[in-house]
Amino acid sequence: DSRKTSATVRWTLASPAPVELSVHTVFGARVWGRSLHAGVTETAWDGAAEGGRKLGKGVYLLVVRAGGERRVVKVGVRH
Figure 1: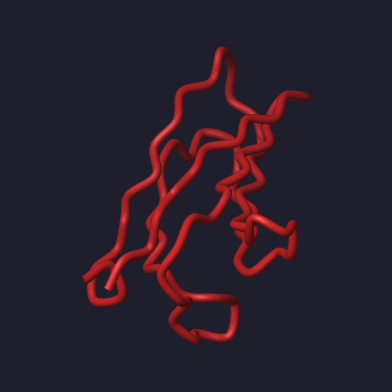
Figure 2 (figure 1 turned 60 degrees about the vertical axis):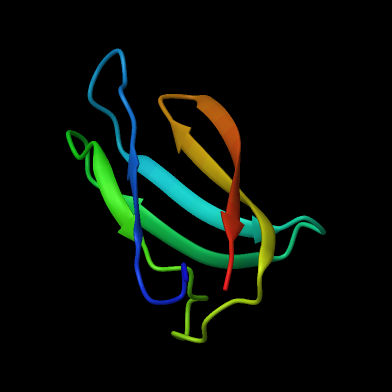
């Protein structure tokens, strides 16, 4: 049950840069986000929205922005 645990998100950058992470529904609505300092290379997401409400099961889009680049990864929440 992904609502009871968290996922660790890790990334590697060519050079240290501030990182913006966000999770969106497949329709584009932002439900979670974090701004991290340069040098940070991992964080956890517990499957909850910004206010702490656990999200429904399904596919979400994790967006990583750093150093002028953007990557999108599909993540799943299951019950």
